[in-house]
Amino acid sequence: MKVNKLIGALLLAGAASIWGGMFVVVKAAVKLIPPVELVWLRYLVAAVTLALFLAIRRPKWHWDRKNGLLIVLCGLVGNALSICFQETGTWLSSAQLGAVVTTTTPAFMVLFAWWLRKVRPKRGDWASLALAMAGVLVIVGWQFSGHRLLAGAACLLVAALTWALMSVLLQLIDPAYDALQVTFLAVVVALVTLTPWVLTHWGQTLGKVDLTAAPVLLQIGYLGAVSTALAFVMWNAGLRRFDSNLAGLFFLFQPVVGAVLGWLVLGEALTHGFFIGMLLLAASFWVALREGS
Image 1 (tube, helix red, strand yellow):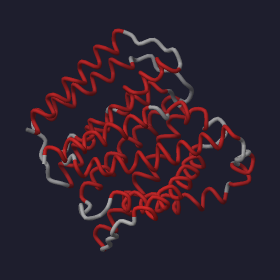
Image 2 (image 1 turned 30 degrees about the horizontal axis):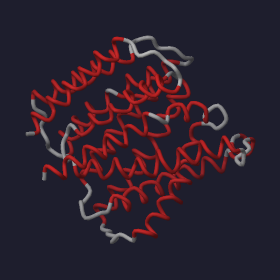
Image 3 (image 1 turned 180 degrees about the vertical axis):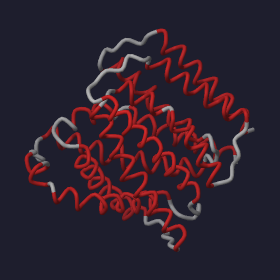
Image 4 (image 1 turned 60 degrees about the vertical axis):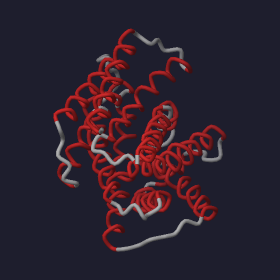
């Protein structure tokens, strides 16, 4: 059981770390492709990638009404709504603001787990969440920049709320369902949902973009195959192995990895706040693991 939970923790941390590294790609891509269309292209590539994996692995498929409905809800709430709002919020605001709003996701997951899974949070859970949120706030600071900040913040908050709801819904799906199957079906639901909008606005959006240009192909390929197909499978599998209402804490790897990559790739300085924040995050995980034991 402990090994299973450790694997879940590694999968969750790995998925969030991949998302932490994709901000630069998204920021560059939305300069050419509007957010909804970008999400649609991501899912188109992800669906093809996941279909190839399914053809190779050939997992045993399951289907029943209850779990099927949960998967459809995950596709609508998490894959369609959450990611569209996330990329719109990124487009409208800044990396710092996105990182701060991200800290609300674990708290929302605790609340949704309390409501849907009847997992009542303990005092240690709230202490862990408070330490985690304080840690990320110290890391990114309060120097927000960017246009249309209020609209961006609202979009990012909706993204955090809907992602938390999807993550708890995933934990309600029967473990017999393969994570690859769940992810593929949820991605297809989101792709079908967004297709009418994309086709209706094709002439004003994607019709004006050279989709064969090398930078565009690389951006869409990375976002679809790595940060969507691979990372979503890792997140979905991790949530079902690390069965805890504090699983959302691993989502906070995203802004931390983003800050480190900004230092390594973009030459951005790491302040004293980064290291203080890392200590707070470490304390948060220690409290969470102590509660779990």
